[in-house]
Image 1 (cartoon, rainbow, N blue to C red):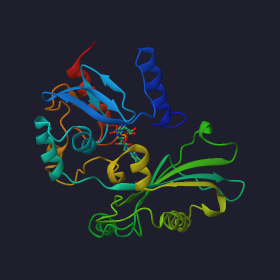
Image 2: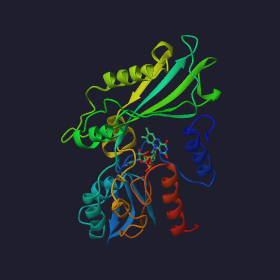
Image 3: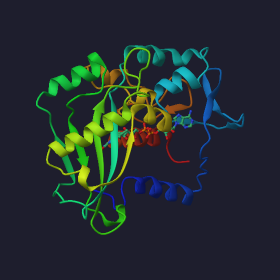
Image 4: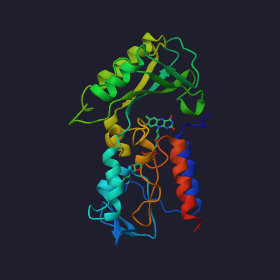
Length: 279
Ligand SMILES: Cc1cc2nc3c(=O)[nH]c(=O)nc-3n(C[C@H](O)[C@H](O)[C@H](O)COP(=O)(O)OP(=O)(O)OC[C@H]3O[C@@H](n4cnc5c(N)ncnc54)[C@H](O)[C@@H]3O)c2cc1C
């Protein structure tokens, strides 16, 4: 299924509903600290120093940020989660392109809404991501090509979202995404051409986002798309609990139970809403 106007419309609908219910939303305010007293969450402190006290804190930030940065190291009840975080491995990251195509410049190619192009050697992709920690030379390419007039600038235009798996931004031990991003974006466009998708000729607009961009705008450590990885049988038990051992603190989002991806993230919120109950 597809939401007319794209996935951003879901955020707008949620915002509207929250405001109808009287929720006060603070935008562009970074949380610097989750305040605690006697192992119990008591509110938050914003980066500008403003303190907001509350009965409960529901944290949607990555659990690594919640437990390692936002809660004081001395809070004993946070220790079990910190131990789990040490054992867990982060999920892979993604390199994405936002492409605007103009079909008056070249022949259009009919695509489905979801399209996946697999490489010849699928194993080599994951060796490059997890072992060599380098951008994938022949990646699996996912293209979302919505047939949605509200998402294009006019007649004969298309707007594609293109995603390839990528190593995390890890300048110390792996790949540093400050390097080579433009060249990598161009290489993907070339690969799309080789797949017969006639992109270069029709290219009207291109934006790309690296794992480092993802880290910067969504505060996802290293640009990991799915929080902690699902690579081992143990993974499910290493995600942050929805009801934290820090009393009155609840964790939702991709790094909390049951995991990453919008449906599971929604389930984490539903679980927490059930636990907290109606006001
Ligand atoms: C390119 C890409 C494509 C994807 N495609 C799909 C898909 O097709 N289907 C799917 O199901 N999932 C997809 N995902 C995964 C999905 O987007 C994530 O699993 C989901 O968004 C995670 O939700 P979240 O609430 O945990 O984190 P986010 O959506 O990242 O939200 C966390 C929020 O917390 C804020 N934050 C963090 N720290 C602080 C702080 N200290 N103070 C204030 N705010 C803070 C961040 O700014 C951010 O807004 C994709 C992800 C990416 C990156």
